[in-house]
Each structure stands twice: as structure tokens, then as C-alpha cells.
Image 1: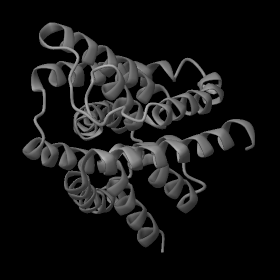
Image 2: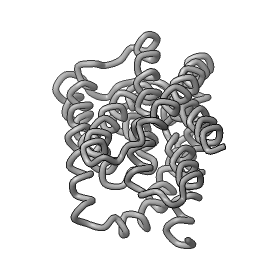
Image 3: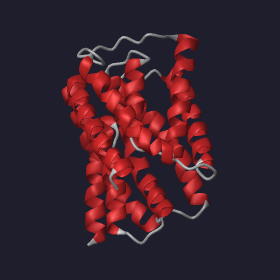
Length: 252
């Protein structure tokens, strides 16, 4: 029964994650519900090992239809990898309890700003070019990559928001760019989890297949319906993250 439950969760997570990020909001709780006695690190590692394939598929699909700014995004992805690895190492020395309480408030500010700025992310007008774009994108990759390794919830949504707000991308291009960086941060996390033996590979393979199928469907929907659709899903996902992280921080 657990196989069916987590496979469906991975399919749905891949669908949502491909559009705007936030798939971990679905798959991670599903794994914890299916295996309540397992070590959290093992469930996190298994989640990453399954979902990274859907993220990689989404990156490839977007790259065929969206003009990716590779000169800036590849250095940003490398910075994201380094940041995620540093964050994963830091969490072994420091507790993320303070961040757990601050996160819902940060997400609430992101949601309020997005709703207030009706035209935010509707038009693709990159603010930077050349080295300036490389530096800004790399700082985003490093900072959110560190957050992903240290804590994690909402990483894809933060990437999307910052690409829209700081670099001037529309939501569709921001989501496509976020997939590449999120793929890099996931690989960094998997490397650490796998090294420490915290991946159930027999489950990860099934989760990966389901995640890729969901990812293909989600990417198709995003490309078909465009920026307005992605913006709407972004608002729904961030709202859900506020409720989930707020509950975990203050009511659980």
C-alpha cells in the first residue's frame, strides 16, 4: 500500500514542482506519513533522489521552448551547488529552529508583495546583462542554495520569486531558470545523503519514474498556458507553504 501512496504523491509533486516549485510540500509529508518510524534524513534523502529526475526533465523540456540565459545560469547553478553543500554541512552544527519560525513570515511577505504588484512577472524584461547578470544570478544561487541545504521548504518558489523580482524575468522564464538551479542544489544534497547512506534506492527508482511523468505533464501545462498560469500556481503554492510552515512552527 505504501508503494501506491508515495508513487501517486511523487507524480503529483513532479507536476507541481515543474510548474513553479513546491513539490516537496507534497512528497515529503507523504513519505513521513508512509514511514513514520524511519530516520528523517533517510526520508529527505529518498525524496531528493526521486524528485531530482523530475526537476532535470523539466529543465530539459523548458530549455527546448524557453530562451535560457545559459551564460548567467550555469555559474548560478554552480554557486547553488556550493551553497547547498555548505548549508547541509552547517545544519549538522546549528539548529534551524529560528529559521523555522521566521520562514512563514518571509513567505507571507513574498505573497503580499506578489499580490500587491499586479504586473510582477507578467513581462520578460531582464534588468541585467553580461557580468552583472552573472553576479546577481550567482548570489541568488548561493543564498537560496545554502537555504536549501540548511532547511529547504519553498526553495523552488524562492528561486522563482527572486528571478522575477531581482532579474526582471517573467514567471515562465523564472520557473525555467529555477529548475536548473534547483537541480544543482538537489544533486548537492543527494551527494551528502548518499555518502551517509540515507537513501532508499529501491523506493527512489519508483519515485523518480512517477516524478518524471508528473514533471512532463506540469511543464506541458506551463508552456501551454504561459506566465499568467504560472503566476497563479505560484500564489497557490506559496499560500500552501505559509499554512504548512506556520503550522509546523507555531502549532505542532
